[in-house]
Length: 470
Image 1 (cartoon, rainbow, N blue to C red):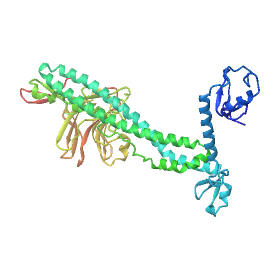
Image 2 (cartoon, one colour):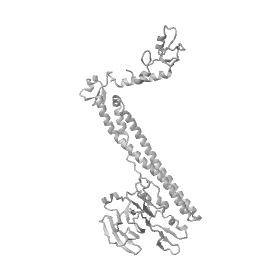
Image 3 (cartoon, rainbow, N blue to C red):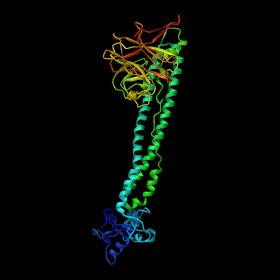
Image 4 (cartoon, rainbow, N blue to C red):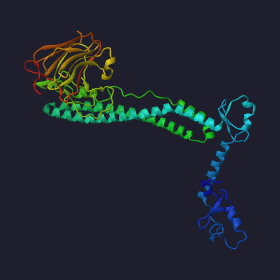
């Protein structure tokens, strides 16, 4: 029985596919030969279906229908030839496991296939489909991963723009306070920021475009292969080798990684802004010995606009860049691998904090496995504890609650000292032969802020003191 599409393309007289179809005035179509035979010997030319009198003895050709019929016949012929053996014109019912090709029952007994192993076509198709699915799986997984990475990179690119807009506003506000003669410096810094934004946005755009091309190529391979998986058994098996080669030849790129430094270097543009223009200012300025790096801040740590204080707050929507810490922490923007450095932190009413130094690769989730890399003092539930890797935890004999903590790093001497600057009381000293760059580490799980105290420099006498002002 003809299929629905074949019925639509069949002549009502001969019940076969239209040959040179013509169109009557009543809109019915017939083979030209059929309608001429039907009218032969009749006084009036009536439609064989509706009996309406045709207005023409030579009805026009139905060109659109003719093209459809020719296409249908060509496709049917191709389908029929695919199912038949090219040597014996027999149905391809078996699959030679040695030659990896469909064969007919005559081929089974031919010399070409002597001693070979055979399988029914449907079983072989199922086995090969499963094999191709397994081969395709790494590409599908890689495609999924690439799309996820692209999503994060897109978020990173958007965050770069947000960072730029936010920092441009901050820079303008600070420069506005420095009076008209600093306008030139302000413009120079904004230009540098814009150039970095353009450079890093361009780099992210190029990465995203490259990844998009890879995703497109993978998608096309997956799409074509999935289409072949849905093909008829014989058609599938005939194209199987090419499909496997196409999938296997598609190189699997290494998992894309967002390298460090992809975000705008906030500290470079905003850190110590007033100190860097000290030579142009003949008045008192403030300087922070440590600048926080918001690109390292946990998503629930809110860093102040001047990058000198942090507080636990609402979860921020931030990109998953490699520098970001995995606990309620933030690192200083500058690491130290020589010399002596000191900074004071106002802890105030904060009842849960960690202060110290750590290597750049430090992560809380791996701290128990670390052999070295972090030295810090913790205050929690009214108790002070010294924690380090290497070294055991030590409860410290500090009785009163402190308002400020002074941290002094002597990198060359291998000492990290904590003290109370208000009473000049020693709290604890770590001793270790440092051999890696160390970054100031700040952690809090309290809703009260931790603030790095500014250093006030007086241009008249050259002395420097820590700023007591809030």
